[in-house]
Image 1 (cartoon, rainbow, N blue to C red):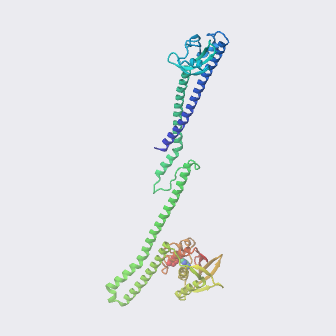
Image 2: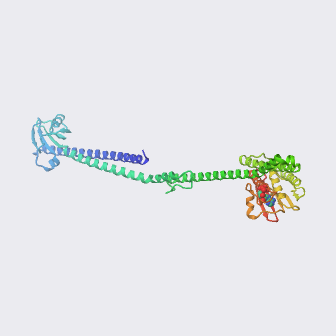
Image 3: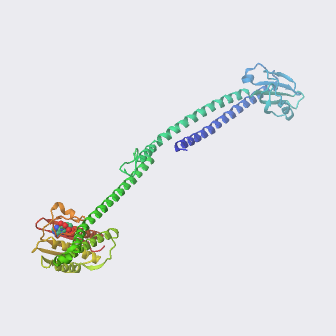
Length: 460
Ligand code: ADP
């Protein structure tokens, strides 16, 4: 059963119950007061009449004060014979209340059958019960008028209760409908939200009521879902781009290897040994490029999937020194590499192998993008609790608008350069710096040189 109907039913039952109980209480209160009023009247009249009879007065059967409101009075002698009486019903009670009064010598009263088919209240007062001239004065009144009044009251009460019940049921239904109509709006709006369109939100009529809070909570959930979907979409897109770029990068050396192999196979091996040697050298070079590329790709994907580090306390001066030495060996005198060491050791909690890899990437780039005769300066410093390895060169530089892009995977600021790599070095470097809680800053002036700084927290 819908909540609306349940609320209506509950309200109607509750209000109906209250009305019923209060009506019954009213009815019985009225009944009690009418009956006791009638009995009081009858008793008073009986006593008044008995006093008159006792005083030897003749009972005035036309006395209004005695017979008012349909009260009858009967005076009997000691044997029950009627001496005088007032109204039509004045034959007295059929139940002979008077005889009980004569017997007991005390006033007696009670409900009694009356001549005709009615019943009423009768009160009998004995006068001189001990003497031979004993008499009894009997007063009575039919219940008919009281019962009629009660019947009318009960009928009226039933109509009022039914009407109130109907009104309260309609009111409860309308209130429940009004209270629940925002729920219908929310349900309608929620139905229209699909996985493909998470930008829609539920209407919030009053953010402070229960339904408003529910809609706000669902909206929060939708926002989080939307953000999660967007992140997943972005990650998928990055992955797609990465796979496409990687295949593209691998295709060039692979085509070259296949071309040289075919040439060797078809003629060069037998007909032109010199050519054959150059082809083998080219194959080795291209294969080397492919291996470097595949290693870079592996480093990146491993870093993406599991950035776990094998950390230990290491002296950064020694790490940077090792990278400088390797760079000098590779540069073969093409550029000068100066290493400015701090006066003291700089200990940091790092993954030595990976930090060495970052330092090498930065120094390799500096050597690669600095023309012959240029200079590279490597400096190890401490900055606000951070350790900084700064690599400055006097190389070609990077235009300002491309500077933020150099950390993107496969991005090359100048793709025409033959000595450039695949554009993965700085992405790997940034990934490693990030996994240490550090970062890499880049500054550059085209034509003058660049400075790349690796910043690492000394404690993780
Ligand atoms: P790559 O293998 O091409 O060197 P990186 O990710 O290391 O890839 O660098 C991305 C690009 O940033 C390079 O292609 C180059 O254009 C630019 N770059 C990096 N370091 C320097 C530098 N020291 N001087 C000038 N350009 C640089």
